[in-house]
Structures are given as C-alpha cells and as structure tokens.
Image (cartoon, rainbow, N blue to C red):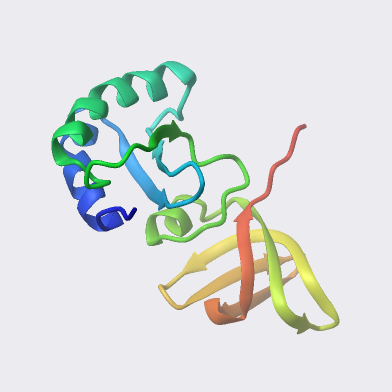
Length: 153
C-alpha cells in the first residue's frame, strides 16, 4: 500500500479549508499496520473538537473521490497542531515572534543545550533569541527542536 504525495493530498483539501477559514498546518500520511492520514489544522481563534469534526466531515467525501490510498483502507484523523508542536514553517516562526520559546540545540552553546527565552526575530535561516539581557542569533541548523513554551500560569 502507498499514499499519494502529501502535497497532492494537501492541494485536494485546500479549497475546503480556505472556504471554512481553516489553515492546513501539516498533512501526515503513514503506511503502518493501520495506515492513516492526519490533517493538522488551525484557525485564527484556535481549534476545538467541533472545528475538527466539521472539517473531518467536509473533507471525507473529497478524499473518497480523490482516493489518496489507491483504494486501500486508512483512518482519517483531523487534529490541532498541539501546544508543544515544533516550529517548522515561516508562519510558525512569524506568529510566535515576541513569545517565549523552548530551544534544544544539537551541541551546547555557552555550556547549555536548552534555553527558554523570547523569540525576537526570524529571517528564514536564523532565529534571534532574547535570553535575559543577551540577544543570541542562531542558525536553524544548530537547533534540534524549537517550540512555543507552554506556561500554565
């Protein structure tokens, strides 16, 4: 079994998402013992269970016609990206400028591999972080994972 490309699946779903005011953050298609497609979505006001259900119901018939699995059965999931989802796209970074982020590095910088600091800027190849009184410019290739910090205050 195999799936059509994630890009083709995303393109098939994009018109519905746009008409519903939904952004497709990521599409994941995995061939496992129980194959699945997961569509991660977001909106200006966040995502709740009702939004996921409405979008699932709207895209189900489109995927049936598009046949992303060439006739094989699979499970369709629709989900929010999650609070601690790694920042991947330009939109992810730009949306979180001025917010606290958690940064894990591949190799230590000044003796530390983990920082919790403020994301100040992003230029496509680098991030600028505010760590206390110090600004640090880091190339993305040095970052193992960066995500918005989750604070339960």
